[in-house]
Length: 155
Image 1 (cartoon, rainbow, N blue to C red):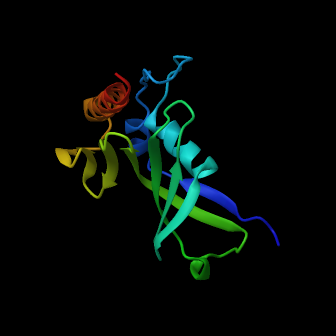
Image 2 (cartoon, rainbow, N blue to C red):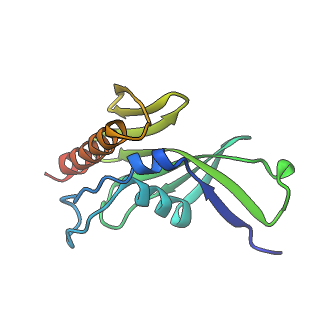
């Protein structure tokens, strides 16, 4: 049986918003991370869970953040709709972080009209995904919230 190849599709502006760098206190090597790269690691290294016919999540625990579960939230084309049985097409629509020790969470999700950031069930409003100062602002907010999430977990 042939291995199925995964193609990951992501909105360029959504990925741009996920590309703000942060240095988590939990990383002993003090590397720069982004939620964009973390979501790609989840798809590549994580465990797939079929949520429903159109959604598949990939759960991953980064080595530099023990106790944190990073989930790449993807929509996907069901196998019976694919043109080729050798390629699975996934669309990244969100990233979810959950601390299994203290219960904190952070979710960044692409919606029809923009980007939502939800921290511990509190939504910080819908941010437009548009070129210019809007995308720079969204990227800064996402990076700051990610830094705060990992800082709180390891103080």
